[in-house]
Length: 157
Image (cartoon, rainbow, N blue to C red; front, top):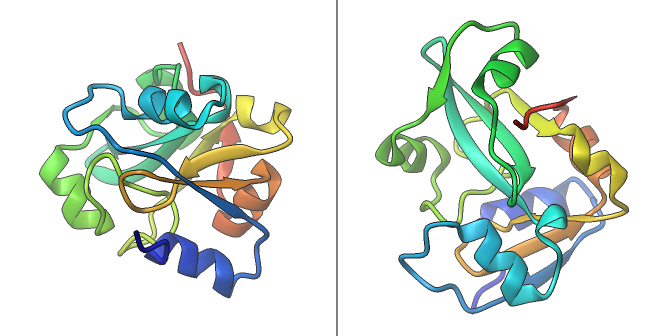
């Protein structure tokens, strides 16, 4: 399988140190992040999922551990917004250029405000989606924050 995606290309261009892990993606799974964690043999607290959210009608991106659920009120507060809800699947795919199950916070078609859950900062390295189903990127959370110029906040219930 090809490991070159807009996400990996962005990291290479930015000279960010990362590694890739591939796994067998099982279509139809409800919790892709948990499936990825199990498949690569890492705790779910180290494998982060990418959620596309509509905040006051505008797109934002949230990155949090795959075993956690986003608290929409905390997310809205992180961006000084009022109302947040999950983006429609079709809209998320169109906006990011990725298929659900393979959405990465990196290399999206349009850069949107992004926030990383603060739990990532307690890890030496985390995994995020590599821009394709069955591909994970391992990198330092601080490198991700600096590269995306994203916020870090408490996002979970």
